[in-house]
Length: 181
Image (spheres, rainbow, N blue to C red):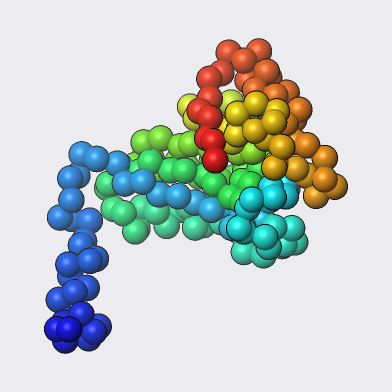
């Protein structure tokens, strides 16, 4: 095997880690912000991230979001707010994060991926107030039977909560993406 593949100071790094300056400047850089890492409020039986109910832990802050401009310069950014479950950050923290994203001139789009369990009118009001163009994706594994592996920590099905969230979005005239596993 050539030594260039085993020596960290060789050109392999230059081939693998290409600077952003060498990429298409018109395309937005996709940035996934895992707001609470693997922390989640449901216990999907198929999920491999089982350290879910971690109280506290590291959390993305507005200061972290503010650094995006330093990291990516003037590149357009497409932000994905992810989890575990991103709504576990709470409404106050989410409002601060969305305000900071709205203040970033290079943020082109913000998408939130949620399991839908906590999604209610207050959350939608918060999104409208702090980032009106927020795109929402809801995790839904088909019909009720398809979602039978998605349960709360008490073992109850979360499917009814997801249906309620989808109905609420429809009542508010909002569309959403659906992610299926």
